[in-house]
Amino acid sequence: MLDINKLRNAYNVIHRMSQNRHPFAEEELSLEAVQSAQVQEALNDAAEVIAVYGKIMNLVSQSTSFKVAPKTSKAVKSSFVVEQDDLSRLQPMTEATNITKLVKYINDTFADKEMHNLTTVELGRWLEHTGYLQLPEDGRNKIPTEKGSELGIVTEKRVRQATGEIYYINFYPQAAQQFIFDNLPAVAEFLAKEKEEKLADA
Image 1: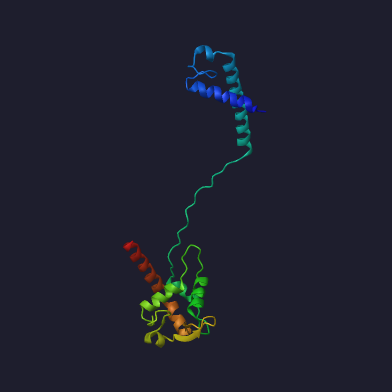
Image 2 (image 1 turned 30 degrees about the vertical axis):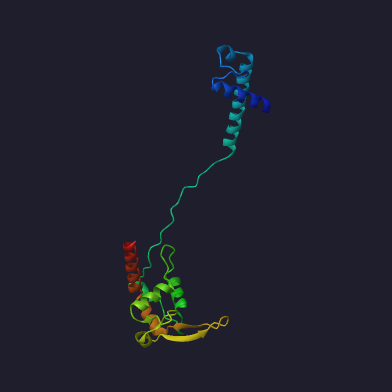
């Protein structure tokens, strides 16, 4: 067991000697002082402390395994891609559906952990870019253009019960669903081009 007094005394002696000071008097260090019994005893105590400390550290290193987990880089998902040959896996729903359910169906069909999922916002941007949807004057919810209406997209007005706020929701019948399915490769190409332009501007 370590004696705290021995430890403190050994530290004081070594510290003062490192400054060329006599360990027990206010005078310069001399050979006679170094060879004195008091200093030798303090040095022996210091050696004992170091030996005990070494044994403790050895026991700790044997009983504890320190492992540093390797740093793994976050996987970067590839862009949304659909091959023409895969489109046959998609079948239009019998009833007209909203864009949220439509996009979920697409993502569930082409589920891939390494691929970025299509979002309703992205599909909405493509439909707006191709002239099937437009933003009304209030700039809130996209509504079908004349071209979109011809495709069969219909809009229903809804009222939020909590706030009384009016909003619009679009429904896509079978024909509109099939049109979107058939054009998913074009949607993917549009999104890839958007990404390239964004990176170029950065």
